[in-house]
Image (cartoon, rainbow over all chains, first blue to last red; front, side, top):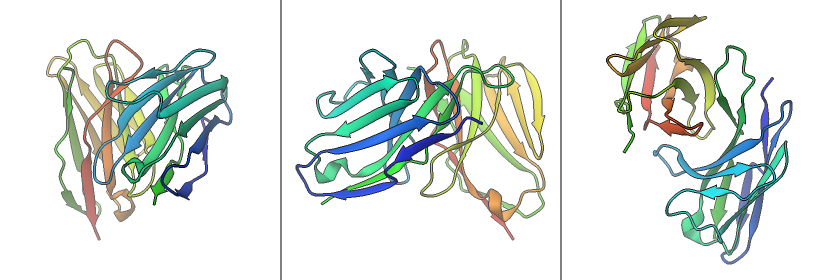
Length: 119
Length: 110
C-alpha cells in the first residue's frame, strides 16, 4: 500500500517552454501533497504544499507564478514549471500525506521523482 | 529556526556489522520522527517512523528516540552492501510538514 506515482520520470525541454509533472496517490486518498526539489548532493528542499481544492502554499523564495500547482482531486496534484530555464533543471519529487498509516504517524510517501533537464 | 542535523558521512562499515546513524533536532516540541533511505538518483523510501521514547524494531532496523536529549538514531544490523545509500532523518514539529536533515551517506564494504 501507499504507492505514489509520478509522470514523466524524466523530461528534456527547450528553454522557455512549460513542463507539467503529475503526481498520483494510487491506493490512498491524499488531501495534502508536497512538491520538493533536489539538486545533486543536496537534501530535499520543500517548494510547496498542495491541498485538494485550495490554493497551494509556497515556501519562501519559491515563485508561485513560475511553479504552478493544481490539486484537482484527492489522488492527483500537478506541478507546471512555466517558461523553464536551465537553472530550473533539477530532480522534482512529490510526496503524498497519508494519515492512516499503520501505527498512527502522519506519514509522507514519495513518488519516484522527475528529472527535468532544460536546454 | 527549527533544525535537524545529521553527520554527512560517509559512514563506512564492513558487511555484517551494525551501522549506527544519528540525528539531532532543535525543537523540543517535535512530535514524529522518520527515517528514509535514498539511493543515488532515486527518491526517498520510508524505512520507519517513531514517536515514543525508546526503541522500535522492524526487521534489521531499530529506531531509537530520546526526547530528553533530542536525538533519534537508526541502527542497521547485519549491514549489507545493498544498504549503501543516503539516510535522511525527518521531523515534524507543530505541523505535518517535514524538516529534513541533510542526510548521512552510508557505505557498506563487502
